[in-house]
Amino acid sequence: MKLMPWILFPIAAALGWLLSPATDEQTNLVQARREAWALPELPPRADQAGRAIGLAASPIFEPEAAVVAAAAAAAAAQAEDRRWRVAGIFGRDRERKVLISFVAAGKPPLRLGVGDKVPSGERITRIVDGEVLIRVGQKQVPLGADYRE
Image 1: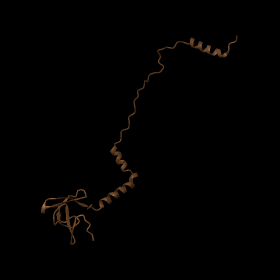
Image 2: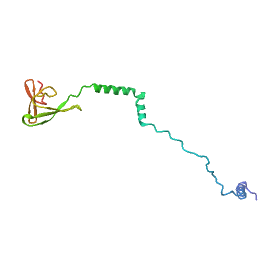
Image 3: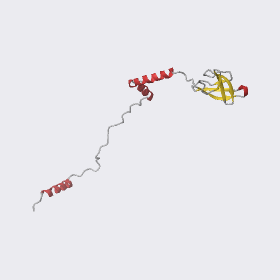
Image 4: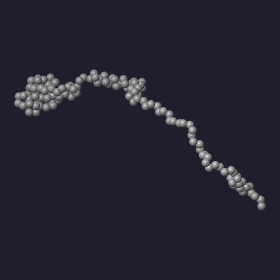
């Protein structure tokens, strides 16, 4: 009987494995690393304030900086807010007074009595229950009424 070549190859491989010298079980397949290693130093964290100043001073914001500066100059040049209102009436009988407060921040309130002028320039003629009368020309009108003719 003739041996076929496809049977010879597995027989040769088995004989080679059986006849090969025994390997030492104690030899390590992977050698331990012998060199020392360390992670590289991280770059220092940038100062946030310095970064913000550098960004604000960069030339990419030049047009916007000019607009902001112009708006700030316009706000400073804007006239003082002159609006006011009657905040309350206090006192009794002939000693009644009017407390006038202003919309502008930081401007102190005024305490005015009969004969004093309100901020718009009219003179107070009477202060009666919850109403302040001012003189406009020859008329006495309540404060807040539309007295234009």
